[in-house]
Length: 534
Image (cartoon, rainbow, N blue to C red; front, top):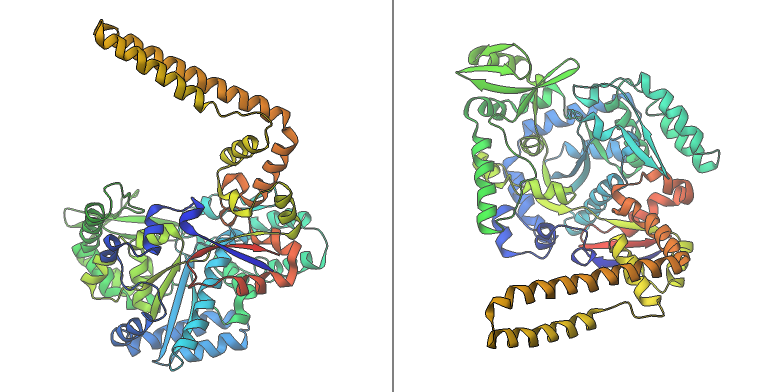
């Protein structure tokens, strides 16, 4: 394994907001809690110890034990469940949608970052325990976003109608999709491992939530990862006070909007919110559907229906059936921090950005704001690919450039003629400068005509430059095609590899060494992008 690093900012593939966060830009500091350094976790541990109750811990542990009754947990999972009952045990959490076959590759990076951070914290703070948690987004309703994944050059799609919480979706019509997928993966030893995982998850489960639980446990159970299904009545009951306040006071709407205004005022006027709060940031879960809760003239309603509830009757439903109420993206993080003894949330750039919108509401609720850690990112490639890149006199880091840019750059380098006509533009500008001086001494009414002619001729040179480059590309078609093929391997569809391909494509090539290689390569406290050659 050969590993290199490149700063996130140098990749050109991450937002200024995230790059500024990693560099601890002072104007961002009011919008998050403690910056993710190992030393800062000492304060985070103290704050969470004071705020997290024994009652919540007992309910959490009991709920998790019940969730794990459907499988035989690993010894490390059982050990972590026991540790969670102790007041000196804390969680490090990541979350993700219930994507089919885990979806994009970065799903694994999130969880590996979480597990590795727990191990580092245990070394730093041996008197405390740290348990990695994967929060299943089972109450999400965006089925379209999770219903497919990319395997090699194919997209595996699961087509069905779905309107409710995705965790409740039955898997009957998924089995044919899995049959087709299994035909694609071949019959190797690694293929059979994939089949085993599918058999013990999607083919052995009643719904998508259970299948995801089983599959993630197959992948990471031996590392002690705790998988949490949050849509549990006992856990929702712990959240009733905040659910009730949301229904009656709508403080989250005010606080989040105020935070966004402060970010735009203090950090950047061009900041665009990742999520927009509603007056009530809750859904009502019904069988096969999820309704947005609205309030008007003192009555609650379910958007898209004729149902109306008085405030008293709706709050009574909340007390009896808190599981009917589902926090949206604004309140889900609050729910997480209420029910878990959590210190840190690990997520992608978009997630970190929307957490920045929430700090003021956490302060209002007097709930400790977690440390926010950007998950690891990587591009993975073989030694054979590395050799091909070297033969083109390029480095892997060059491939972070957009495809058209790197192709044009390489064509200019290898071309035996100079395609850069900027010197002609310089000469032309000098000539028109001379003309402008003549016009100023004779008749200023010619200024517009001279300027227009200058622009026209500069545009003509630019167009000629483009045509010459296009012609040269045809002459160097072999090099261009090899470059395109390599770029497609590293950046499929000209996007980050981790956002596009599914882990199965790599597992079939690398096999059982795949996950251990990632665990060794990904350091959550190293704020750089990883280039990983296997």
